[in-house]
Amino acid sequence: MNDQVLYDVLRQEMRERKIPISLGKTCPVKCTFCYEKDHSYRPTIEPPLTTQEQWEFIMEEIQKYPTKQGEAWLLGGNEYMEWTDIFLHPKAMDWLEEFLETTDKQAIFFTVGYAKPDRIHKLVEKYPGRINFELSVITLGDSRKKLMPHAPTVSQVLKLIEGPAVTSANFYTFGPNTMSKDAQTISKINPHCNLWMGCLTPLKYIDQETTALMRYGRSYLPDEARRIYNAGLPNTQMIHTESYISTFLARQKILKTFDACELEKKDSVVVSGSVYRLLSTLRKNRARYLYVPNEMLGGDSDCSTLLTFNDVAQRLNGEKQVYLPKVIMEHPSMEEKDISGVTFEEFKKRHPRIRFKVLHKVNAKMSNRKLYEKGYVKNIVEDYLDNPLAKKIAEAPLPN
Ligand code: SF4
Image (cartoon, rainbow, N blue to C red; front, top):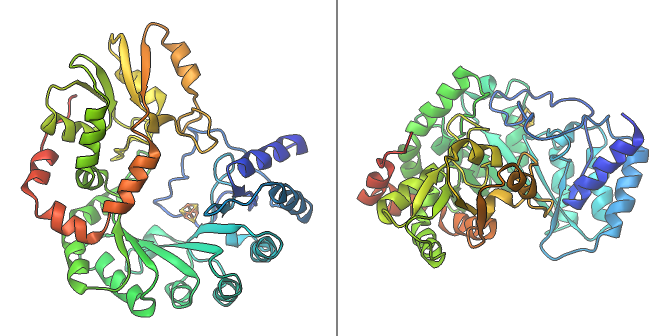
């Protein structure tokens, strides 16, 4: 790869507030659930193992960006480069330390646990409030070996959790006494870190065995959530992964936002599955809901934010005017692009006979705010699992 291409990609990642160091190869952890298994939908390069010289360039560039309150730089490029546990890079820990020492910026990283426990705990103590360490535990149980054949051991993961470094631990249900057991184990050694839980979602390129395990796990989500609720753990406990639950819990806001858009009955509005079920039940015939499945990601995915323009194109059927939620085109680069990099302008050019209008109120800021406000285990048990309306909406059929 020529230097020009590489340095351009590094700059692109930094514009999106990434610290773009690379392992120089595809991720060796080989998790069977990895969402990076197929990233052919977006353009990426395979940068070589980051060298000292490239690191110096990265640091020089980062220094040029003003520090914004609350803004954290993500360790590892992940948009135009491939994703991995960046602590597998032999210099990652030194470079993180240098970043903290020579800038006043915050760092965030997602890792399956290859950070060195003693060092990362010391760094967090030395630079309080500057590190967000999101630890992907996934599971401490029997499925771990199968799902994460080259991941750190459970004892390494527990060493990370028991110090001050870890801000949040995410882990999932894979059957009875999986997620709830992990929640209790983690809470016992660290009552402060946030517990982010739920299910892993099968996408079309995930193998059958892993897909079956994910779905089996999901069938136990209600039981597992109740067990955690009843355990009364001191940690913040959230479940963010299931769109049908998140949509239901945010229903008042979704309906209010939708009503405020003042659509006519004949207007066609692009919606994902869960939103379709909600609106077709509670706002029947108030507009034409154009259900768009997440074809690109496939599997059980159901999310407006992850819809692509190609997904929408596949469902168009003679409409003259179509309303699109803003979330589809809120790319981290701040350009109006979907997750596969297709711009809104390109999409419009491909469909010159259709007038596309954007529902600006249906944006990522609103949906993220609701996700965090409503995604507590407490809400899920009290307002979703025990609510007959939730069942009614879940049973609403989707169009073919
Ligand atoms: S560590 Fe992350 S990037 Fe690597 S295989 Fe596992 S999930 Fe994928």
